Figure 1 (cartoon, rainbow, N blue to C red):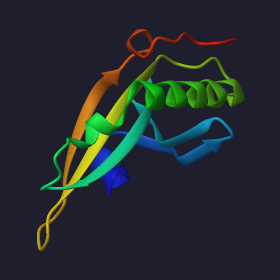
Figure 2 (tube, rainbow, N blue to C red):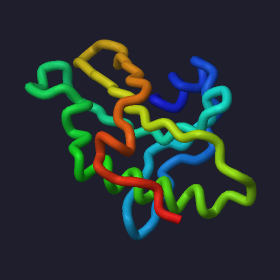
Figure 3 (cartoon, helix red, strand yellow):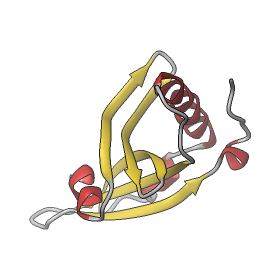
Length: 116
């Protein structure tokens, strides 16, 4: 559902569930000139916390480490990278709603840098 939502918004999905021993990235996409690493979080509409709250600093670090591995596998020079979250909120007998949070976190905010 999140992938379809992003595709309708113009994002080209390059990979789904990209996994390494360090972690997983739910979706990797291309949004214009940026490579986008996307974490998808789903919650019931009555949940206490927002889905984005589940993307803790530790989770951000794992996503960044996994993104670094993805970038090393590219045969070309990687474009700028952005980290986004797509929240999927569902309620009984309703169509789930998506909310796309662009620039959800940065390397600085997560307290890490790209490794070479």
